[in-house]
Image (cartoon, rainbow, N blue to C red; front, side, top):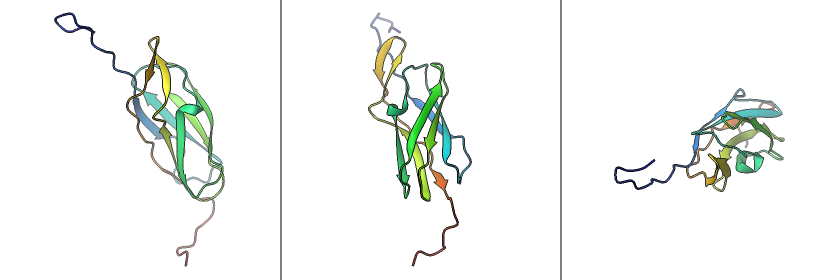
Length: 126
């Protein structure tokens, strides 16, 4: 794209439009899934591009990323053990190929928390 005087404008890099939980919430599942949608087609998306934020869970991990360059992508997460919450986020350092150029995603979006309750919790911890 160019301005009226012919100056070329920099291309806007892709960004995450949404990270949406597919799985039920709360969940007692061993695995939960998220859909990730980018603002434009990207390629080279893998598990290293994402991070998990969780509370009171042990061993949670991203197990699979699937999708096509035109998206959307599905990210499968093993919830580990314990009762707590888990959230999928895009890493600030995520790199993808978009329109034949390597671009850094400049905008990240946090996913929503998924509550994991594998057993009934007592009302009071005291």
